[in-house]
Image (cartoon, rainbow, N blue to C red; front, side, top):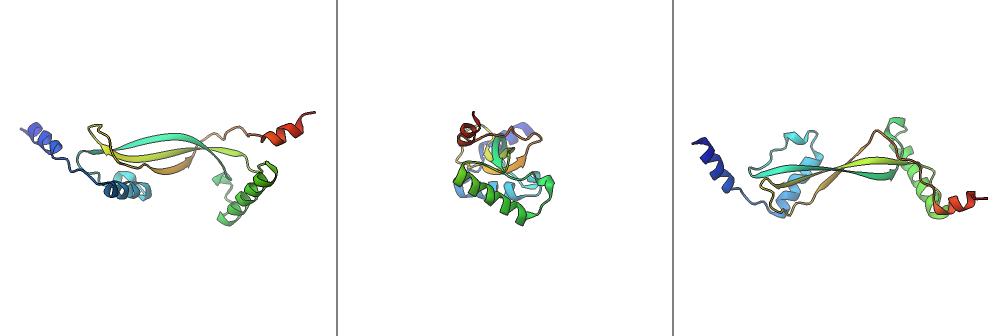
Length: 136
């Protein structure tokens, strides 16, 4: 008897609009604990993680937001002017939370990204100009 009621409720899944999905994903992205955000019946949260390379200061240096922003701007200027970075690349793991139908049907959900640093920094990359200048 309970199983039939669950199947009937699943068949009456409310279809969320793109705006409602976007709002729900924004709540997931900004929540202190994503598990505290209620997910409508018939939907589930799909978690995907992808590595991404960024040039930034490691957070554990604790230099403060203003100094970190200034050094990142200086790195950008050096890259634009000389093709050289002063900051080493860090591999970040981008975690995306998307609300999708639980039955696997296609969804209009747009993933909302959250970036978290990984444990290992990436090997430094050298610009082609700098590599050419270093050759004898």
